[in-house]
Amino acid sequence: MLDRWGENAAQRAQLTVARQEIEYLRRLYGAATDALGRWEDEASLAYGQSVYRRIFTASAEIRVAGSSVALTGKGPDAWVAVVKNALKDYETTQHLIGTQLVTFSKVTFAGDEIVAGQAQLTSYLHAWHAWPDRALRLVLGTYTDEVVYSPDVGWQIFDMTLAHTSSEARIMGDPA
Image (cartoon, rainbow, N blue to C red; front, side):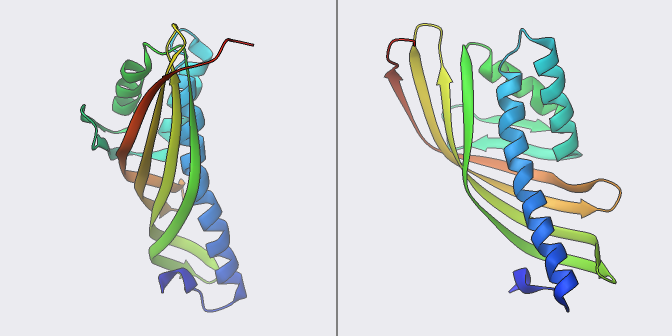
Protein backbone atom coordinates (compact mmCIF):
# COMPACT_ATOMS: atom_id res chain seq x y z
CA MET A 1 0.00 0.00 0.00
CA LEU A 2 1.51 3.31 -1.09
CA ASP A 3 0.40 5.14 2.06
CA ARG A 4 3.06 3.18 3.94
CA TRP A 5 5.88 4.49 1.77
CA GLY A 6 8.93 5.64 3.57
CA GLU A 7 12.01 3.72 4.52
CA ASN A 8 12.33 5.28 7.96
CA ALA A 9 10.46 7.21 10.61
CA ALA A 10 11.47 10.59 9.17
CA GLN A 11 10.05 9.75 5.73
CA ARG A 12 6.86 8.37 7.25
CA ALA A 13 6.54 11.60 9.25
CA GLN A 14 6.89 13.58 6.02
CA LEU A 15 4.01 11.53 4.55
CA THR A 16 1.88 12.37 7.58
CA VAL A 17 2.58 16.08 7.08
CA ALA A 18 1.90 15.73 3.34
CA ARG A 19 -1.47 14.09 4.05
CA GLN A 20 -2.46 17.02 6.28
CA GLU A 21 -1.32 19.55 3.67
CA ILE A 22 -3.32 17.76 0.96
CA GLU A 23 -6.46 17.64 3.12
CA TYR A 24 -6.06 21.34 3.86
CA LEU A 25 -6.32 22.13 0.11
CA ARG A 26 -9.99 21.13 0.18
CA ARG A 27 -10.67 23.06 3.39
CA LEU A 28 -9.14 26.17 1.83
CA TYR A 29 -11.30 25.57 -1.24
CA GLY A 30 -14.48 25.60 0.89
CA ALA A 31 -13.54 28.90 2.55
CA ALA A 32 -12.48 30.47 -0.76
CA THR A 33 -15.69 29.35 -2.48
CA ASP A 34 -17.80 30.95 0.24
CA ALA A 35 -15.70 34.13 -0.11
CA LEU A 36 -16.38 34.17 -3.87
CA GLY A 37 -20.10 33.96 -3.08
CA ARG A 38 -19.81 37.38 -1.45
CA TRP A 39 -19.47 38.87 -4.93
CA GLU A 40 -20.07 42.49 -3.85
CA ASP A 41 -17.15 42.41 -1.38
CA GLU A 42 -13.89 43.10 -3.24
CA ALA A 43 -11.71 41.84 -0.36
CA SER A 44 -13.60 38.53 -0.30
CA LEU A 45 -13.28 38.16 -4.06
CA ALA A 46 -9.54 38.87 -3.92
CA TYR A 47 -9.13 36.34 -1.10
CA GLY A 48 -11.07 33.65 -2.98
CA GLN A 49 -9.10 34.17 -6.16
CA SER A 50 -5.75 34.15 -4.34
CA VAL A 51 -6.62 30.89 -2.60
CA TYR A 52 -7.72 29.27 -5.87
CA ARG A 53 -4.42 30.35 -7.44
CA ARG A 54 -2.56 28.74 -4.54
CA ILE A 55 -4.43 25.42 -4.41
CA PHE A 56 -4.86 24.75 -8.17
CA THR A 57 -2.15 24.33 -10.78
CA ALA A 58 -2.29 26.89 -13.60
CA SER A 59 -3.76 24.30 -15.99
CA ALA A 60 -6.00 22.39 -13.54
CA GLU A 61 -9.01 20.63 -15.06
CA ILE A 62 -12.03 21.41 -12.87
CA ARG A 63 -15.59 20.12 -13.24
CA VAL A 64 -18.92 19.42 -11.57
CA ALA A 65 -20.58 16.21 -12.77
CA GLY A 66 -23.89 14.53 -12.06
CA SER A 67 -26.08 17.60 -11.79
CA SER A 68 -28.47 19.02 -14.34
CA VAL A 69 -25.92 21.71 -15.19
CA ALA A 70 -22.38 20.71 -16.12
CA LEU A 71 -19.76 23.19 -14.97
CA THR A 72 -16.17 23.13 -16.23
CA GLY A 73 -13.10 25.31 -16.13
CA LYS A 74 -9.41 25.11 -16.87
CA GLY A 75 -7.17 26.81 -14.35
CA PRO A 76 -7.97 28.78 -11.21
CA ASP A 77 -9.03 32.04 -12.87
CA ALA A 78 -11.50 30.29 -15.16
CA TRP A 79 -12.93 28.45 -12.14
CA VAL A 80 -13.27 31.73 -10.22
CA ALA A 81 -15.52 33.00 -13.04
CA VAL A 82 -17.60 29.79 -12.99
CA VAL A 83 -18.04 29.89 -9.20
CA LYS A 84 -18.90 33.59 -9.07
CA ASN A 85 -21.57 33.06 -11.73
CA ALA A 86 -22.95 29.94 -10.01
CA LEU A 87 -23.22 31.68 -6.62
CA LYS A 88 -24.32 35.17 -7.72
CA ASP A 89 -28.00 34.71 -6.85
CA TYR A 90 -27.43 33.40 -3.32
CA GLU A 91 -27.45 35.55 -0.23
CA THR A 92 -24.89 33.33 1.48
CA THR A 93 -23.27 29.91 1.21
CA GLN A 94 -21.49 27.51 3.50
CA HIS A 95 -19.42 24.65 2.11
CA LEU A 96 -18.72 22.01 4.76
CA ILE A 97 -16.01 19.47 4.01
CA GLY A 98 -16.40 16.05 5.62
CA THR A 99 -14.65 12.72 5.46
CA GLN A 100 -11.28 13.09 3.71
CA LEU A 101 -9.10 10.25 2.47
CA VAL A 102 -5.65 10.64 0.89
CA THR A 103 -4.04 7.88 -1.15
CA PHE A 104 -0.48 8.40 -2.38
CA SER A 105 0.22 7.04 -5.85
CA LYS A 106 3.82 8.21 -6.19
CA VAL A 107 6.29 9.77 -3.78
CA THR A 108 9.96 10.53 -4.38
CA PHE A 109 12.29 11.30 -1.49
CA ALA A 110 15.71 12.93 -1.47
CA GLY A 111 16.98 11.79 1.90
CA ASP A 112 14.08 12.40 4.25
CA GLU A 113 12.40 15.16 2.20
CA ILE A 114 9.64 14.72 -0.38
CA VAL A 115 10.81 16.16 -3.71
CA ALA A 116 7.98 14.92 -5.97
CA GLY A 117 4.68 13.20 -5.51
CA GLN A 118 1.17 12.47 -6.62
CA ALA A 119 -1.90 11.54 -4.61
CA GLN A 120 -5.68 11.36 -4.73
CA LEU A 121 -7.91 13.14 -2.21
CA THR A 122 -11.55 12.22 -1.75
CA SER A 123 -13.73 14.55 0.36
CA TYR A 124 -17.43 14.68 1.13
CA LEU A 125 -19.36 17.91 0.59
CA HIS A 126 -22.38 19.23 2.44
CA ALA A 127 -23.17 22.73 1.14
CA TRP A 128 -25.85 25.26 2.08
CA HIS A 129 -26.94 27.90 -0.44
CA ALA A 130 -29.42 30.48 0.86
CA TRP A 131 -31.53 32.69 -1.39
CA PRO A 132 -32.68 36.13 -0.22
CA ASP A 133 -36.28 34.86 0.19
CA ARG A 134 -35.14 32.40 2.93
CA ALA A 135 -35.26 29.41 0.59
CA LEU A 136 -32.34 27.03 1.05
CA ARG A 137 -30.66 24.69 -1.38
CA LEU A 138 -28.79 21.86 0.30
CA VAL A 139 -26.23 20.08 -1.91
CA LEU A 140 -24.41 16.83 -1.19
CA GLY A 141 -21.50 15.54 -3.20
CA THR A 142 -18.05 14.03 -3.31
CA TYR A 143 -14.89 15.76 -4.48
CA THR A 144 -12.22 13.64 -6.12
CA ASP A 145 -8.95 15.52 -6.51
CA GLU A 146 -5.71 14.52 -8.17
CA VAL A 147 -2.85 16.39 -6.54
CA VAL A 148 0.80 16.87 -7.36
CA TYR A 149 3.80 18.01 -5.34
CA SER A 150 6.60 20.26 -6.48
CA PRO A 151 9.22 21.63 -4.07
CA ASP A 152 8.79 25.24 -5.18
CA VAL A 153 4.98 25.32 -4.67
CA GLY A 154 3.96 22.39 -2.47
CA TRP A 155 0.85 20.28 -3.02
CA GLN A 156 -1.69 21.49 -5.60
CA ILE A 157 -4.81 20.13 -7.26
CA PHE A 158 -4.36 19.44 -10.98
CA ASP A 159 -7.69 17.68 -11.56
CA MET A 160 -10.92 18.16 -9.57
CA THR A 161 -14.28 16.53 -10.03
CA LEU A 162 -17.27 17.27 -7.82
CA ALA A 163 -19.74 14.42 -8.22
CA HIS A 164 -23.13 15.90 -7.32
CA THR A 165 -24.97 13.32 -5.23
CA SER A 166 -28.23 15.05 -4.39
CA SER A 167 -29.95 18.37 -3.76
CA GLU A 168 -32.86 19.44 -1.66
CA ALA A 169 -34.75 22.72 -1.43
CA ARG A 170 -36.35 23.82 1.83
CA ILE A 171 -37.47 26.94 3.64
CA MET A 172 -35.27 28.19 6.49
CA GLY A 173 -36.65 29.28 9.84
CA ASP A 174 -37.01 32.89 10.89
CA PRO A 175 -33.74 34.83 11.08
CA ALA A 176 -32.34 35.22 14.58
